[in-house]
Image 1 (cartoon, rainbow, N blue to C red):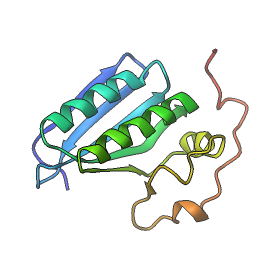
Image 2: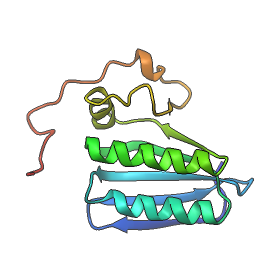
Image 3: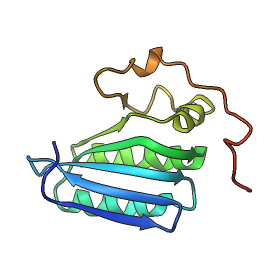
Image 4: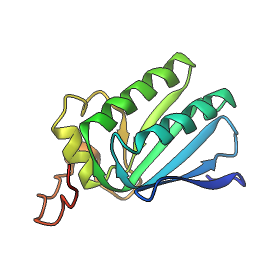
Length: 141
């Protein structure tokens, strides 16, 4: 459930983060849209640190609108998870998009990071990610 505290932060043109505070004020949902990589993840770290400082120790990252995800960003999310747990909270990755699932499958973090999906969808363990198409990797690294 979302509360009145909603606003957007943008990490450049490639990642937008929508913050939604739950009614209990100890929880925060961050909806990420766009590319999640080593160049955009710093904003996520900053927002997470600010949330923890405000006492919001239960975080949900909605990853349903991520169009690109690399291993470096997953390792950063693992660090965020450790910080949140150290503060006595929890971190959940919700509704991971296909690029996130591909990155998780290419790393050793699939079973380390807590994943969930919304009602009406298959559990993550049962969902088969789509094969990447010829236009899925549109970035130049």
